[in-house]
Length: 112
Length: 112
Image (tube, rainbow over all chains, first blue to last red; front, top):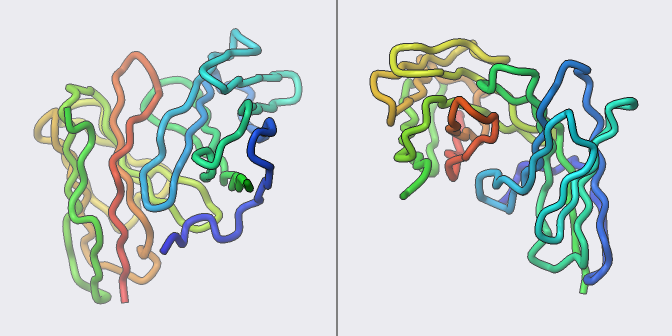
């Protein structure tokens, strides 16, 4: 069974609603931010990224917002579907591109 | 492309045993890295490599060795397994142009 994420914060939403997952980062020198989705028993999967010279970026059904003033990152998922149920991680890079710092993750539970 | 592959998928060791976790990528990525994932702690960097013959330590390197003799392969060696090394291990790769990591499916390791 899935042991990772036993003590994660959980966001519960109804199918069709919009979801907002938040992340605070600590390093003001971080210049690249990435959101990953991890389904049970699988490796993290890239969703969307944003550089520090941007404050918003949109993908298919997903939007990432970056507020450098308060060091806050959010992932918005439109029209949430059961297949979106997973653990979501934010990650930051402070240059060099050879290492990422990951947040602890948020579990998204989508209910019909 | 197979992407990033890892073997084995599951492994049980006794304290003091040694083993090697295998990782290979066929995307010709320059960078490769190993992370461990523990409940509620996100992913933590163990070791990384920016090219064949070049490796460096991450956040939690103790008890692990790595080598990078080819661009494709990046094995992780546990010299003398301890219960604290019970975790899920992920190998990842990326190009030098972006910190976006591509992850393998993971190895779930239990040390008794």
